[in-house]
Image (cartoon, rainbow, N blue to C red):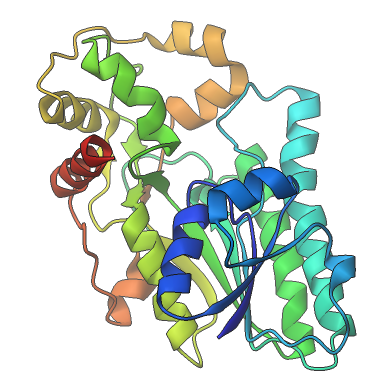
Length: 304
């Protein structure tokens, strides 16, 4: 397949690009920093600095849109919120505009989103049809998905991937947590009862491959492992995986002081999101439980 990818140098995108090339797909990656992208991705994929470089006679079978500033990277100031929104909407809007001017339109747009769409919830299981709590993360994902859905009017099949917290070696949340936990500085956040909907990066990539191989799937997919866990359980399992105690909890007021609204909504609240559609359609997770996922992450991290 001929595939256009945005966000191809990120935590998910770089590994996805590597695996799709091994499978023989012809990749074009939209990048901001050409030199850095070439070092990250190697010599094989075509790199674009702008979608304006794409001629109207160019043909892509699919587009994978992973672009967007990290939602948990910094405090949510007004400026940061604007960046989180613009980094998603502007790229997605530009991709739809590209599809409008291509003589032959791609058959599929795979567009990232996040379980933040549902907003803060308790422990009740949430599926793709569950109601959302209206807050910033919901509005961010809602507007992102609405922008992507505009491609449907062009006859393009659109799949929206509501990603959980992605675990993998070399980056993401584990990249920030492992140094602290290895020094026995880890601990639960708040009371530890908030739910964490997570997924191993390998399963994210396998979901993308699963949907690329299909010909009729569309709409929303929760991309989370079947087993969500509480923050308390996650803390215990990660501490056990590195063979260190986790006895330094961060009280909720301290989390709120350190991280502001972002810390309150993302770190002290959560969702118990289930991959109902993927399971109904026969997708098999390689890492359905947290213990096996953490073991794989640590094994890969130590071997690199």
